Image 1 (tube, helix red, strand yellow):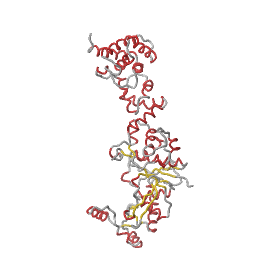
Image 2 (cartoon, one colour):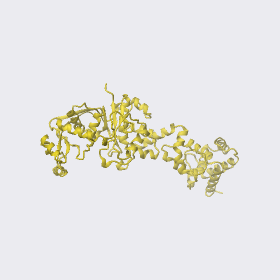
Image 3 (cartoon, rainbow, N blue to C red):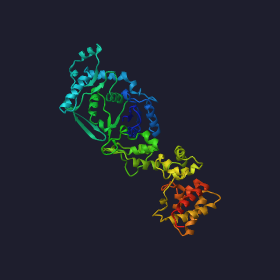
Image 4 (cartoon, rainbow, N blue to C red):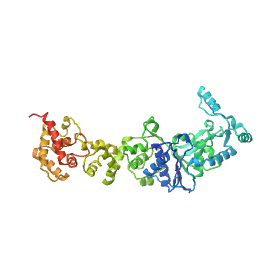
Length: 486
């Protein structure tokens, strides 16, 4: 049985699109599930779209998510070079060979001639298909014109009789009538191959067994197969995957402002959580498990469970999953990740590891941290109505009683730590004949000035320290004194 070989072949045009990263993941899982090889190839034939530094972004992204390639531009291999622009002479040789085999022809038409036919098709509302007069030129005549320096492209030659079919691992048998297949350019006049032709040549010469790509290529795959057949090459196994959608009508697209992998990481999503989530976009495991390590995904991945239907990118689901990953981290590792966000919001001297201790079980995305903890630095202005909580059954009078008694009790604490604060505050409800919430809610409100906090009154008081906690409770007492009866 032939060893499975897949390739991720991104173009260096900017940040890593989520759909591209999912394709890379599927290719990696298909190869590794079968003990095969996963290659990285840089497709830079479209020099006009190349972005400086984009290749480094590709390497960095693959490293961050753990998709280690077995061959590639940075580590080499037996099938290099792995950058298309370094393979140009080979494309020219294969294009000329395809002409000799009858699968392509030399075309000398100008862009104006092609555009004229396009306009004529638009006028009669007919899909554009270039009817190339050059395919009737003899090979000998074409070579003479080339020898004289005439500019040309190599264009595919397609017999418009019959049909071409292939079997896809996701969509089953696909059949297309040959008369709707366009004779596309394979080699441009500047010597660069088109994206589709370079793909075919590279996949064959690199021994790629499984070609994974978006389902938008389903209709053009028959054209690729005609080229394979003209050379007498074995067809690869095709795995066309559904698109990743923003909603039911729109594809996820960086061009439309949708987040790239780098954008998500910058917002505080963990690379491993992103990878886990996108594995479930268009693929479903057996059973109910949703949280997978990369090693677990390799073990359970099955092509047959890839869906035909588009996958909707649900940021809320990713956020939930990211929270699961954050909570599963060792405290020290979470603390290291959180430190840059603490520096944005906290400039006072507090024990940050204690902040991490209360925050880790409540934060879902790291960029939520500054807003969750900004009260530690400075008590915000807050509405006195926050002391009223229907569930806790608090009133202004109850809140005032709670704060005055908490202030008196906390002033006696000499060894200020979470245990002693806990003991003192939880002794108050029984003595005051109140419920716990009727004491702790007003104290938490006075300490934080916020309705939602990562920790309760006891944890917050411990972090703020005795002096600052008493100062804030006094502020709360003064606010309540203004609305309570003397």
